[in-house]
Amino acid sequence: MTALIADIGGTNARFALTPSDGAPALIEQRSLPAAEFASLQHAAEHYLALVGARPTQAAIAVACPVAGDEVRLTNRAWSFSQAELQRSLKLDALTVINDFGAVAHAVPGLRSEDVMTLHGSDELPPQGPVTVLGPGTGLGIALLVGEASSGWRVVETEGGHVSFAPQGDEEWRIARWLNARFGRTSNERLLCGAGLSHIDAALAAGEETAVPHDWAKKLRDPAVIVAAALDGHDLNARRTLARFCAVLGSVAGDAALIHGARTVMIAGGIVPRFIPFLKSSAFRERFLAKGRFAAYLEGVSVRVITHPQPGLLGAAMVVRQSAR
Image (tube, rainbow, N blue to C red):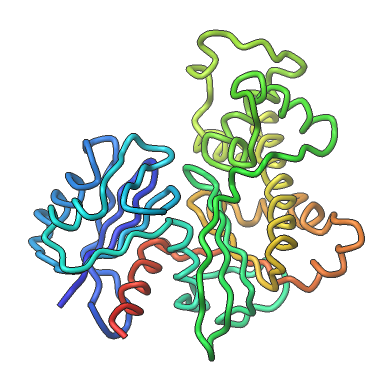
């Protein structure tokens, strides 16, 4: 017997099947463009028709808070009733979790080849509490508490929407540029795919904060910015990626202090593309720049999750737990 698992973000809807019991595995993986479907139900039905499966159990990770029956995605105009989705897909059991909660569930199932250590211990499973954060379509943050011997518990959060705390003149200019457009600047406004585009445009604008009517159409694609930064010939792109890494360091350090973390795991679809750049950036310096608690953070292990589908793996781990 297999179960349906899914990782639903603002850009992609990723699906797979996994055994209902036994070791978690990802079978018949597919990534579907979310923009091509009117709803999660339609995307799921399309996937199940593609692979010819009729599972009776599902675990679905979604990029939004999950509280109650009604679920509304943050960065995609999809909403659904858990009860109605369960009936429509003819499921006996449905579990819906936050997407970064799913990544946190995946952490105990990671192998050495699924992570890259930036600093500190590389033991697996890692020492808890574990802060899990990562820039993707948005900025996800979750907390993993417990240990391998007694079991793990995931605490889902919306920490990515905490207010941005700029440091230095350049970050204050970026904050003013973003405030002029959005009224408030959260960490997610910088630390996500669109955030790279925002930083790039703000740096190019210099002191100018006026908001042209077509400003959004002039944003550069984040993949183009990263490629140009790594190529080394585009100064603004390189400044953008360097600033992105510095801010990520500050936010990761803040989250580690808030959680009392002994390990920080960085996930998401962006950072694994430029790990060498991250290592040589101000990430570590800003991670430690917490005054009297710099010594505490020296003892925190920091790693990047390189597993290609940690959200799906986490959903598979949830299926495994529910089978016990």
